[in-house]
Image 1 (cartoon, rainbow, N blue to C red):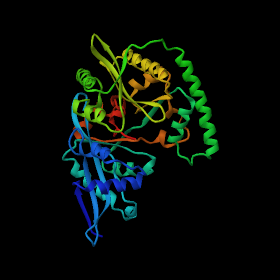
Image 2: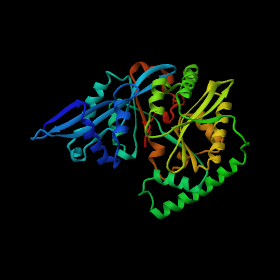
Image 3: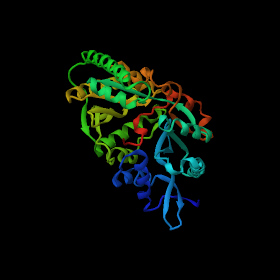
Length: 378
């Protein structure tokens, strides 16, 4: 078997999308591929490919190790991070122990471009990838929490069932448990809605360049207060939110004398569920954050939405506690069905020594990670 490793070149997209479709069952368009990998805010994403050369000169894609460039802010200091995404091995070659050596070699090469790396792990790979990257120096930092406000019972049932392993219980018992939980959480949500005052302090608007400029100005004034988080610079936000072909984002904003004081950016999925992508408020004001969440609930009810979902790191107590206070349920607290959700950490980071020497970086509550740190697609 003759293997050849190289970085992405023109024409490789066909090989990548074919393997991606085979593994994920998703038929990704060229527009979405080019946005995610070729035309990012920081140039082309890092794609290390491994091919087998056939006797007739044809190439077969064996493995891909790839990183999306993401700007992170460490207490106001910007660092270029690489987020692992679409790392995959051709099913025909998985028993030949090829992928691990390919990732390790590619990872060392990627250090020339990226200072920090982060990844998510879980049951999709049966935690194998977490073990591999742990040996490469990654540290398991935290786990994800899913906060949900249920406006319609069916929406919560669909959401929970999509997160569960189907073999945990028999399907009948599973659906009964989820149905009971959905009824209880929906009833709880309706009680909390009774406490809402009529009217909104803020306004909702579609994504546009003007609001991005205001977000950047708000971020620049507050970046040192948010610990380790996404650096909300103009280039990244324009690429991640305005140019994203996967979703149409909307902003809920609160202003004072024409100056932005806080925002929630979100999208609505095909099941009529609102997903919070990012939240930021001036001076980390809990009062302004509470206003935003209240306004979002009021707006969601007025639009007859089914539910509101917010995915953040569990250590993000500033946002998490505010969501709970407004009636959201932390579904991770009720994940009795899944051992990994409470015993293993899905968010892993690789930090260079000069960051590891900073004790603040080791504190989970200093990582303000919202879904803005994700790849921005389904």
